[in-house]
Length: 219
Image (cartoon, rainbow, N blue to C red; front, side, top):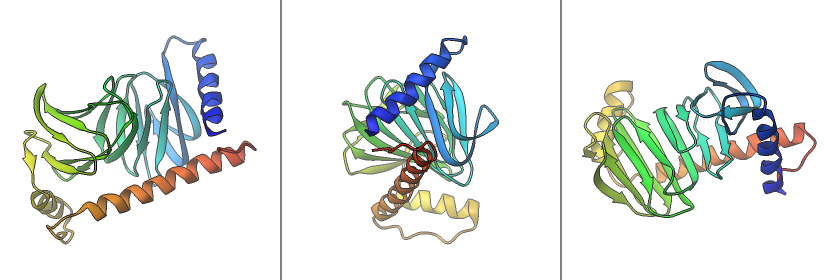
């Protein structure tokens, strides 16, 4: 039933795209306000190739016609194209992440080694956190392969030069910019897990609320 609901949304978008020149690539949904190409939106909005999505105080989810799903965290922004996401700010969790889709943050490019990979990419101060939630992902800097991040692991990279950064450096940079206390420099997988649980819960609320408003079950 959930797949049928997604198919219905995408079919509606495809029908709409037939009347315009912009290429339809999916839909974006949010329980709170968000913007598409600087235009405030709520509920569901059709998404065209190269559109910029920006969230405020609630997460928003993009479901693309190629099967890729992108969950933007709060206060996040990115440009969504059919074959890539340019993450400009905040965090995004990408599911059904296959080798044909790429994620870019400045000079860094994240790609998957296999279909149906799940990855969390988050900008933290001057660093980029790449965490694989399933499958192997590779990280390159302007086309030069740097490393792989295996399932269940994460790494930090400098946004300016792409070099790997330690979790300690990431915490120091974030604290120096925000004035917050520095987090412990030991293993920080718990932070990623807690963020993932919170953001996934937000997405469930988004989907369920929108479905309830339309009198449909999302499952």
